[in-house]
Length: 362
Image (cartoon, rainbow, N blue to C red):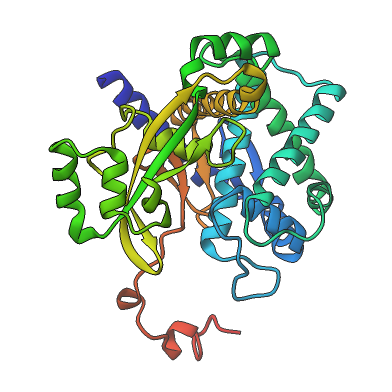
């Protein structure tokens, strides 16, 4: 632990020195730099192109909203993009030096298709659709920005394939994973009870005293399904609701409501939702394939993100203060919004502060 702390201190000192000695660099990562001009051009491109802005906003939780001036961006959006740039440079370096990754034209073409698909999937999940296609969003990027993003995507894909903790997304490996986790893909039939918050204690007590799922639903549920004992339907891996149903019933025995409900809004009022699994049926791989693929993609992404955090932790990073501050939060290293003095410290501008009447004012 002491060695880790020492390494972190050295990294932070190095980052400070590098940032001070390379003022023309927007960012520097282990000696590789991206100029302030390049970053500003990229931010201007995002602010000025609606399709690019929309797709990047869908991909990243931060808002790339306009700033006060023309073709400008608010501080949080600029910082979010700077953070993505730092991550990309660090991943590119790691792939090249540690994984001996040198992408070919075919590899870069595959990475571009992957990036476009990722952008499209992110945009599809938004309530407001983006104008144009993900390919058009890439076309709106400055050439250097587009080349970098495709290269970073290629490095990320290579990293995923080489981690010991990831599972190759081949049909054979997917079937092998399914065979070991087939219970995770059961088709689940459920009953529900929508209960007034004031009746939750009585509901739990009634179940403890032996009242069945159907009896509880008939007595307490405000949902129309309560009249028929709460039966709500069956959900297989191909259902859009499967992930939520699986999570809600993961540790709940058959024909039993959990003791802790989910808080929901029902008919514009607060309510408690109880979900009980009533039947589990094995699902053939052919019907579960999409869910297996999604689970493995998420697991691989988690493993890759953990490795990315390790890479960033040991990287020497310098940031132009105009774009943000490099530091640690509870989940890892990242770029923070630039620190600004409070209004109490700044105060109101004075004539002297503006230089009017001074010998240096022209």
